[in-house]
Amino acid sequence: MRSAALPSDYVIGPEDVLSIVFWQETALSADVVVRPDGKISLPLLKDVQAAGYTPEQLTDALVKAATKYVSRPNATVIVKQINSRKVFVIGQVAKPGAFPLTGDMTVLQLIAMAGDILVYAKATKVVIVRKEDGSERRLKFNYKDVVKGKNTEQNILLKPGDTVIVP
Image (tube, rainbow, N blue to C red):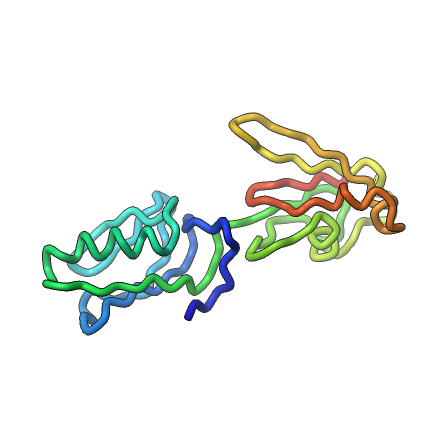
C-alpha cells in the first residue's frame, strides 16, 4: 500500500516524502520530508535518522523508539514521493538538468526526457559519469549507434547520481 513504486534497491534519502502511521496513535503519526541531514521530526520521538534506511528498517527503528511512550506500537512507513534519487544530463540537450530516478531508466530514456540531443551535439561521444567505490568511472555512449539498433549494450540502466554529458 505505497504511493510511490519503489525500486528494489531503494533506501530513503533527503527530500523524500514519507507518511509515518502509528496504528491507533495519531499523536505519533505525521507526513514528513526527510531533511538534508537525513533525519525526520516526529511528535514525541523528535529527530529520527531516516536516510540510509529501507522503509522496513525505518519502521523497526520507529517501533523501537516509540516503546518509551506506547506499550505495543505498530508503525508503517509509506513512501509518498521519491525525491532523493536523481540523474543528471548536461550539455547539448534541449532541457539539461536533474531528473528523478523513480524506477528503471536507460541513457536513451533520459535523453528523451531532456528533450533530445541538439543538432550540433557530438552524438557519438556521449559519456556517462558514475561514482563507484569513491572513484569516477566514465562509460561511452554512441547515441547514433544505439538509435540505429547497434551496440545497444551501451544503453545501460542509470543509477542514482549518474551524470550524462552530451558534448
